[in-house]
Image 1: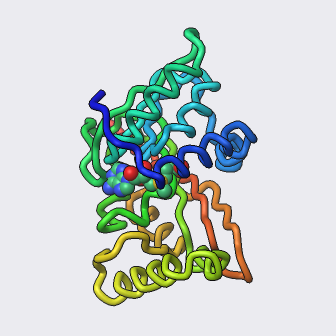
Image 2: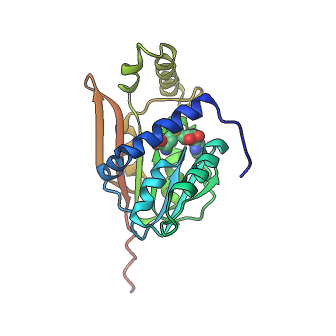
Length: 231
Ligand SMILES: C[S@@+](CC[C@H](N)C(=O)[O-])C[C@H]1O[C@@H](n2cnc3c(N)ncnc32)[C@H](O)[C@@H]1O
């Protein structure tokens, strides 16, 4: 994979992600959403440094694929997983790609995960449609994102970032366009879109700050298409 320059931000993100993996928090997130990847074909969209895939490899899945737009994360995720996973474990493959245009055929995966990526996609509905397209009937889609309460705890530390998030969300609300990255979502709206796409919400966990949703996790199942009775 082509070598690229790692920034301070990448460095901090990677460090935090692998600390969460070592401390078992990543596994907690997987368990919280009832994800079991045994014998499954799994796609992680916006995989970042790949820590979620490292954790999922424990379940011995059939196939693990990580997709991200960022070459630096992909390069790190690939090298890290090659160095820490045992030979007998399923090693993830990493592919550069951008939601909402995933380079896979319809109904390819049993499990599709997409954590903390929705704030960055240009349109929630188009992104969710693409995620469900590549999911098999009966398969599981697991997503997470930030709600309106997320920036509250950062108000003191990063004065500009929380304000930027609120501004981005306000613009999205008014125009339906994500002109600035890092929008906050209303999980109720996300669930509504998922329902319209034929998904059944199985699990929803919300973490709140001062009563407002800071982070949400959703597990939804793609409804099986019941074949019409033969006449
Ligand atoms: C906040 S990080 C989350 C990383 C990882 N999923 C996690 O939970 O730690 C967001 C990731 O999404 C990627 N990303 C942003 N927009 C994307 C898009 N449209 N398609 C694919 N990946 C995207 C970024 O490069 C970044 O790695």
